[in-house]
Length: 211
Image (cartoon, rainbow, N blue to C red; front, top):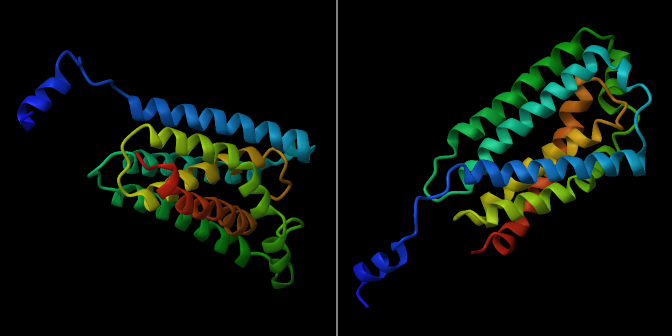
């Protein structure tokens, strides 16, 4: 069969291409991952009793994590399709981290030097990145499922994008438990947890996203 006839045969009565399929699949993955991470955080780690009194610190923390979710979603959406430029979402991710870093530097410099290391390490720095990665596991599975059903071609980078999105979603669930509020802590240890999950995604990408 000639190529032209084969293409015509495949396209015959196929109907219009579905719209918003990327948004639908990634939206489903985010919803499932967030619900799973939130339930895991509350049931296994416990809800932070001081959550309602977080004030400005909690607002800054949630704003950073939500901004990372948004930028990582854009990145994953771009990596889900072939021949898509991904420079702008990466720039958006870098801008989010830069803004948080600038805020962390300002917050640290206005505090006495004797308090800076405590603000950076908090009480949970040893466990924080690992708990974020653990709580991100359901979101990672969901994100890889979502991208596999699309058409990623850069599998390592696509897996990294899926992992970064999952890490941000898992971090959002972790905020229900985490008592830390300083920008310094959030910048370093939350971001490390997200990058850990992104690294796992990059390793799994060539296997999980092959189509």
